[in-house]
Length: 53
Image (tube, rainbow, N blue to C red; front, side, top):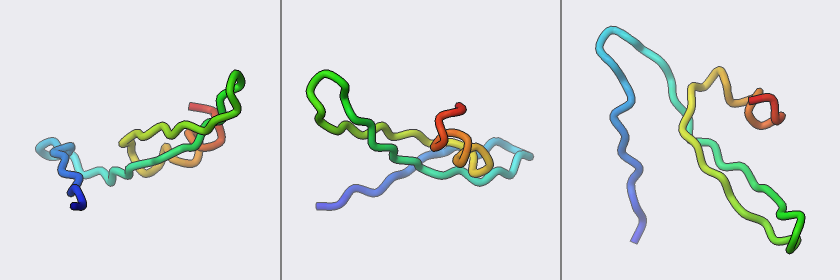
C-alpha cells in the first residue's frame, strides 16, 4: 500500500515551495548504492544535487 507524504512545513506569513529530493550515492567500500532523501526549499535543489550544499 502506498504511503502519502504529509508534512506541515509552512509557517504563518511565509510562503515557500518545498520539494522532496532523492539522491543516489555510491558507497566506496562495497560499490552498492544508497539513497538519501531530504525535504528542502525549491531554490536550493540544484546546488544540493551538484554537491555544493
